[in-house]
Amino acid sequence: MFQGHSICTIDAKSRLILPAKFRKFIKPEAGNKLILTRGMDECLLVYPLDEWDKVKSGLSSYNQFNSNQRFFIRQFLNYVNECELDSQNRLLIPPQLMQFAKLNKEVIVLGLLDKMEIWDPKIKENYDKSMPESYEQIAEKVFELRNSINRN
Image 1 (tube, rainbow, N blue to C red):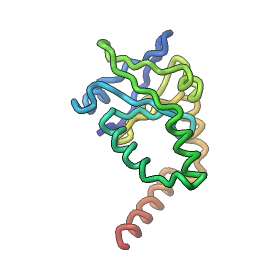
Image 2 (cartoon, rainbow, N blue to C red; image 1 turned 45 degrees about the vertical axis):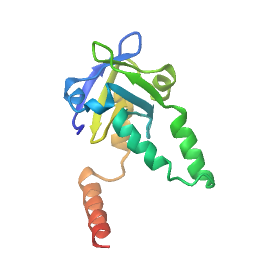
Image 3 (tube, helix red, strand yellow; image 1 turned 90 degrees about the horizontal axis):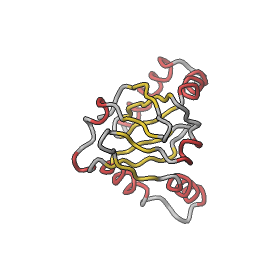
Image 4 (tube, rainbow, N blue to C red; image 1 turned 45 degrees about the horizontal axis):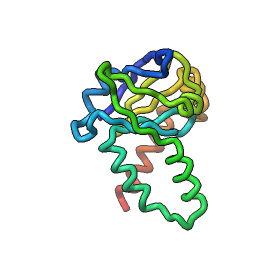
């Protein structure tokens, strides 16, 4: 699936050429269609359409009578935009998403297994620096948590 990162440029019309290293993992079932939406930590999420269908399935199990879950779903779905890669493998980033993620000319596209993230490089750098613990410390805790869940 999607992994690694690329430094990319957004053109004057808010289009981004999706790097080949990511395009090759878009399955034919997605029909060249991508879903862009608001991510966490001021980045954008990009899902191939077939992976987005799995996300929607999971969202349908949320409790509509729980105010926090209802708020999350409203906020998450409010920014959803479907786009299709054009003949030059560009995707158009809508103005409200450009503004949300504070995107300018240069961006980082980051692969995260079933989806990608689009980051402003400075925001990504600040996010990385904001972690109170090192990568190694967090990795140890994630591994321990995963093992404790698998034991139960």
